Length: 329
Image (spheres, rainbow, N blue to C red):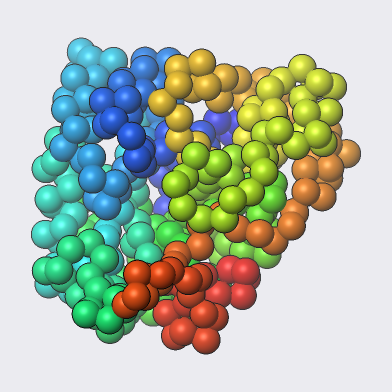
């Protein structure tokens, strides 16, 4: 692993620092952020069908990626994700090709199964029955993964990945895979570091990538939690090392061998995130950040009940909650 990139088990290289592209505001803010980020030096862009902005992102890619443009295609790492309604073997290739077309790409560097549970297609992104229950398709992980492997055979995808899977679900894939997953994306930050899952991934030569590395304080759903970057311990480390609290958090993850895909549309924050190179946290400071672990995650899916109320999924639900089991150990 270099300071800026990690070698995947299949020989491809993935920049450890990326830009997440989910945004619940004006999509022009996000596309402007992508353009600025690439111009400033970001070389890993994380996309997904369900973010609802692939066509808009594709317009930016057409402007900045390619021969004679800001960056050659071979010099940038772009990830995409298969949504839950497309898990059936006869739907995976079409979904991938549709995303590639919208993004204006010939291939994905990484294509990820976004969640381990498939949904019934044709009724929206999260189909629900008349009682408000999510309509699961029952498509097996084995069926989905076999279709994902064919994407590599076709040259549409270079590496395969998973997101929001726990170790039992990852093991199920490993036990049957012809082409192994190279990456696992999960929630990870100082409050919820997911260390047990990181250790599991490392033992399986899978690179863990952290979404919500700052705890996603701007998300309009999920637990209402204190802002991680305002934590006094992080601020103390920041003052001592002369780097922002955001840089401290990102550096901590990278020194754990974890990739990070923070999302921001604010140019000063994006520039600041690039300041993670050329310095290190001491063993003592790494342990201080480790000590912030509380086991409390932000991204917890909910059920909408027939009376309009919502509740957090019950762990006894066989789909709980779309792959979050046992603290993702």
